[in-house]
Image (cartoon, rainbow, N blue to C red):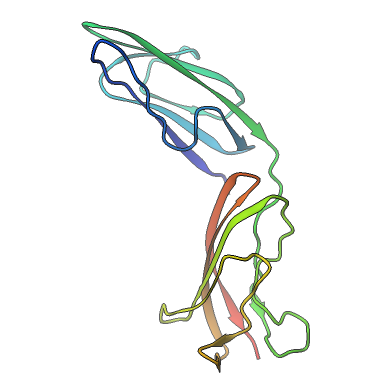
Length: 180
């Protein structure tokens, strides 16, 4: 699955210009296959260094992207962003089932990836009624199938996770089966 990121350039004209940048920051590195949308908010005459004159462009190749803004009665404004791409082969992965029966095989539901640079990790597990039964911020800690000191029944459970892999945000959700 490819990610798409938005990058907005807001231009204010009070005799000078100022740009504001939400995430991702000015210069950014994305994973191959991701798209960065550069967008100008407002009614301006827009010229990108790609030759495009629309308020937004989709960036899918590395390079320096610049924009020139003009409005009647106001001086020109410009800014640029370098966008790079790298191969990101590591993704956080989870099993589709686990069996917490103390046989030392699949006794914990947890991420099974070995991604370098994994940080800002969060995992939440919910039962079929949406009740939170487990939560951790440690990627090396998993759920043992126990909630409030009670072994949970064989059933489908939902998980939600978020993490950063070498500074690249990743999040998702899924379903798995607890097998006894």
